Image (tube, rainbow, N blue to C red):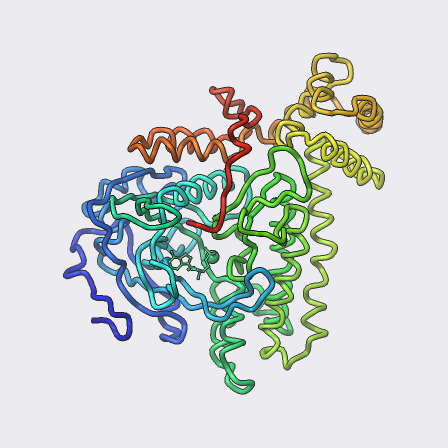
Length: 504
Ligand code: AMP
Ligand code: MG
């Protein structure tokens, strides 16, 4: 039996050739940072879906899953030689309140494998109880696993930094949520799953003079994930600034594509600026800046328009956590976050210019963008469809103009905006065909709207995983017009009643 966990190792790890060699760098830091334990077996496992794109990223052969034991490994029933599973400890602020110790309550890192992009951590999510499971059961249900899997790969295809998803396995094992569901395990991969919350944990659990663990973790992060910061006068400040800049770029990505994360707690914030922990996320359908995608978020703390400020708030929590390494110099810490205030708006403006097909920069572009968003909000125009139709907008082509105009309630206000837009395009000598091509490669046709995920989930619950795999393929080319027009169409009426919550 493993110390303190009440869990036992599987009898024998399968002795089969592994597709890769495995390491676990964090293990060298010692068990203050994690607990080693095996996954809990999921009975009678089956494959639900696999991402070839993710396998390619890892440098794995596309038939990696035919390796002996692969299904058992990725359902928590076996380990390949060299894997060293562990759950890490972290804390965090949830909905603005210090939540104390959290940790990998159902995630388990199997180990790190060498990829063409360096060492990547391979993690099972939903692989059973860990010492950090608190009141949870350590499991994840099929529904939320499909959402995480599809969205991870969709975000990557959109060019947005994210943890990736290799596969989902399922099991008839019953899992109780609002009703009985079945268990699934997503395998996620990323260069690192370190979160703001990992640093908050060691800042809060030590006395003022006991911050060696915090320093060890920060040094680990610097060494392996931010080596360029080591050359700075103060590497910890440089790290903080780097995270602030990456997070600013990520927020600009989210806002520009209409992505709402839903649970931007500090324990869900990646130290690498990746989109992390897909739960009750959503893409905007009808544009509403105040849209709250998480049904459990009663206060609307994580509303779409608030995300950039929340990220900045979260960065302050990270800065606070690093203070013991900065001689408590809070001014220096706050100064390291300062770039966020310029990087975010500039990054967003860059993306919005691209969404409008503007090749040059003018000060007045800001109001052009803001006024369009205002009109969209007033009309509750569909976020994705508006920009997609705008990508074919040509003043000289009545049909293309009307396709956009029809999305607005106040048609005259739109006409006035369109005239300004036309003038702006003329000012830079914009060539319609070139602009259209650029915009169609910037404004996606397909995003993972809730109802698309829901359709795949409903079929999967009936044992048909074809729709998950089909959707995965469509989402892999989000800028192409999909073969099935409904994938890029307005959400159907029934989608209005879909609710996603923290239940997963
Ligand atoms: P989340 O809201 O999914 O980011 O999770 C917040 C915390 O709760 C993390 O520490 C998770 O590991 C933990 N958690 C969520 N669901 C479960 C579960 N079913 N079993 C154990 N821990 C869980
Ligand atoms: Mg989480």
